Length: 305
Ligand SMILES: [Zn+2]
Image (cartoon, rainbow, N blue to C red; front, side, top):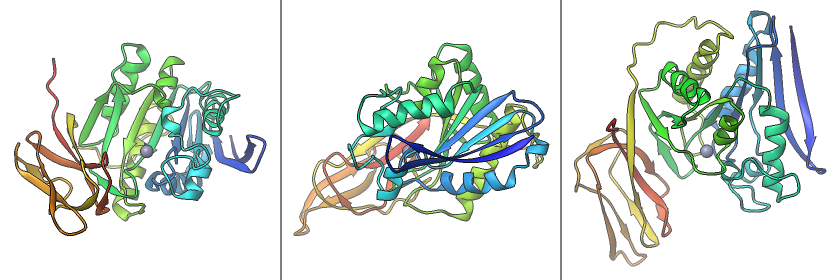
């Protein structure tokens, strides 16, 4: 049983990806938990810092690798994307050892942190410009790893689960191609760390370890029945001031007014209306908007076919 804290120098210059390996009584099962894939999402980072201290290898069956900030340059800049190449790391996997900085970083994460594990959990939040209703994502992937990903997502205790066909370049897709189960989570936003976000993140991490039989769950039995959702987005068509009276979790009817964008002179440029009946799952809270910015995302029950 052991605990290794490692600072790995990467990419030939001063980019260090910190990670901790906690090895219990046996090597397997082994899982890796990531945060900080995007540089402006912090609940997962804080939760993993705490878990790396809290988890006692003596109590673990198997191995847990904790990597709290896998995109240090984006973190330092406080940006979603790496400022060096303006690339979204979570659209860059599996990467290329001879590509751009993000592409090389992606390959390093796969080779050094992901490979050889049974499962991965990647903790995300919404950007510093928005808030999200917490949910888990699992892949629509016809494979054993896909089925385990879904079962694992259901075990975590989220009220909302969103099955996805992850786009090319997402970390979880590279995991699935290696036969590694993958779940992504969305908790928090606005660049903040909150007591609620930390409590939920801790639960999600411990439920993940329970699912993989690495550390038994000792909390109260969960009573949450997860429901699967689909989503619809509203985007800004003009630059201006976005104003909405909505709150996360509000229920809205299709066609209801969700907010407005006004020009600098106060003129009404856009009225945002609900494209579906649903619940406010993502809400832009930063009032200055540019064309293409996501303003609102609604969740509605997923129709199972
Ligand atoms: Zn993210």
